[in-house]
Length: 418
Ligand SMILES: [Zn+2]
Image 1: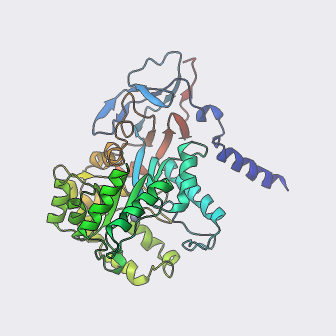
Image 2: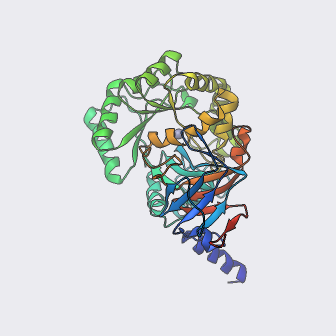
Image 3: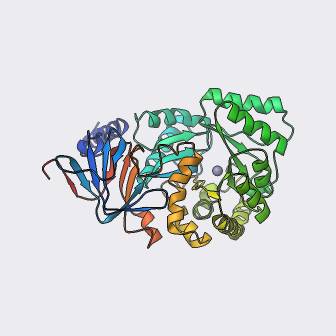
């Protein structure tokens, strides 16, 4: 083996053991670290000026710490905010070594590496928590990321989704939920509509959805429903709390879901644009066709219209979820730009949707998604101010998860001598 190969092996081992950064000091959890900031967004819509954020044992303990005799990172000149949460990704979706959408014929060793890479790229783009919905094969990755044996974001997975089936009995549906629970799922993903590419037709009744969402609750899991058209209101009536996509829903459907208190996740900035950009890598595999691509592209204005309605509705809980598939991982922040440009949402509201609102949606609102004492030290910094120029979301300079720094492109770090 030549030196180059040894170098790559060493890099792989160091990456896998959580020491990817050249400077171990940046990766280790500091006993007490201060982030000096001049502009920080608190994750709930407020702006903090000149906060000195103290981090101890992976948690934020103060916003006005005394930096004397402590290690500091100077983030002045950047915009600091809680690490983003993407509540809807497909981390197992990737292109294989031939450049085509990978299928289940790909060796598991290759797909596992691709998933780990996609998770890493997503965190480097500022997303310190992602929820994947989902494949059974994601479980080992989830465990490794959760326990921080592998560097990457906090990671939740539904494992395999429950597919729509109008002839399934209530007992059969309950058994599917319990099976997923036994397999270790963090939530239950349910398909209540067929793909937009094949007509977006209902695939479960209101009664079936009620059985599924209630059974999920009974076993202590959240449920998330993929729904188009009137299925958005149907899922809300059935007591399901998180509803995705909502393409072709009427204002009345959306209003009903909002009134029921459901979290809603429209997509406008990444998923369809990525399909179109990469259509040659998708078409011909897993039911992707040119005609299907044209339907998604042609219906984008309807997605914009749904999103525009939602962000204007009082009390609407609009969550950040990109639906990222192969080609889109690490570009998740494009959804913020889409929200501002295509839905007329304010930059602050778009950012909050990936902080406290998304944290609430995934059931972690009491310790994630805010810059406040007691919250996890999942913190990012952007070059520029996204409130003035939303494209700043593409320029992530600093990423911390649980108090560990995984990315810092700046140079303002000093020790206790300051
Ligand atoms: Zn999806």
